[in-house]
Image (cartoon, rainbow, N blue to C red; front, side):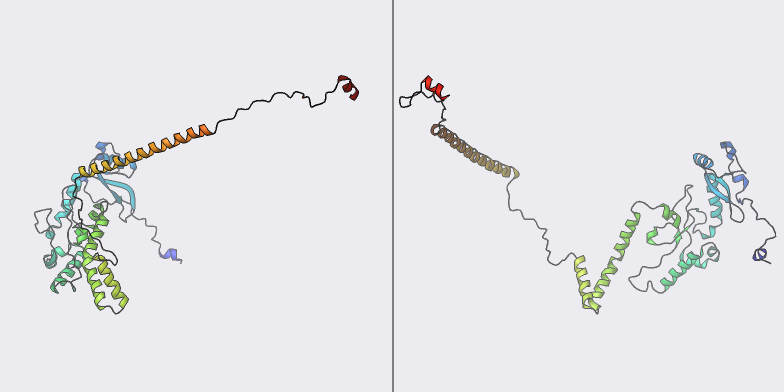
Length: 326
């Protein structure tokens, strides 16, 4: 017998029937809106069906089989149906409410929750554990040291749903959660919310950091550690070596702005007149130099020389002698 035969289920098929726990009379009739229903309020999970459901202000949840496998179907839920389901779920938690007749009432917390056995069955285990840890710390007189924050006490989420009913989940009770459960805390994040929360956390831990620096400065064994701690304390206090900033302002000139402008204009006028006089003097000198040059250096006129004429000192040659020489 092989291993496959050991786990053979005998050919029994798993049930694939959709598991729908909503009564038929509470499901909306989607045929009125043009849907092709698989069952009352059940349609196929397609993009077109989701778009139409969103257009008619319906919500939907996926439908699974009894074994948890997806069926490719979605169950439409109207606003009235969602509100009715929440009220039915809240009716089973009346024992948790401090005011059972008020749907948006707070949950029992602290000692009231622990001593009520019926309420303890309706809360998650982590809520009971955190509540008991909070009560134990309060019995011991608070946190073990002054630097540790007290333990948080879980409370009901303060957010409200679109139906106007308060969320039925629990908040951890920590300051940074702001009274919201994990679902609404993730949906309530804004731009810069993490940075602001980190800044608040730094501000809260600043006194403990200063205490630690002071402790190191006084009780550290290593001298460099003491020096570093003292330097850090002085640095955070705004005192740095070689730097002294005087923020005091002393006014020595009591003149009005009009008087200051008038004096500056007068200085500019005097300077302009001096520069203008210097320019006039330089212009006269240049004109005088040009005149002198014209008088001393006159241009010479070139005249062509006349043709040379024979003189008496030169011998004359007759025509006959010229012919013989030729």
